[in-house]
Length: 112
Image (cartoon, rainbow, N blue to C red):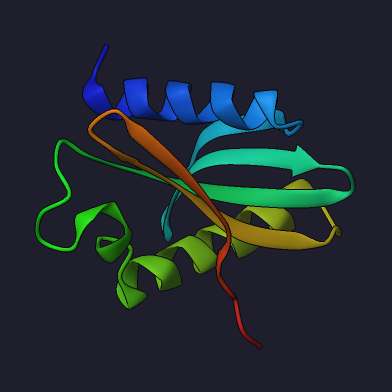
């Protein structure tokens, strides 16, 4: 299994243990890709999974740039429109560095 796929599988399992439900994996559109679409109660959660062998160069969190956030927001809007979903949403991140996993709820906002 590819390292990115392993990280996504690990993140999905972790989030499911926290009570979230997996809706879709690797949603792709022209605007970008969403690693995991999860549901927590009525809230749709778009999850970006970032994996680094080590925490150097700012680690996994630093790799979620403003440009990356913009692509995720566009992809999320496309997902909602294509599925006809009208639900509260948020953007989370799961950061995996070495053996450590960190879940950032509300990692960033979509803005207006």
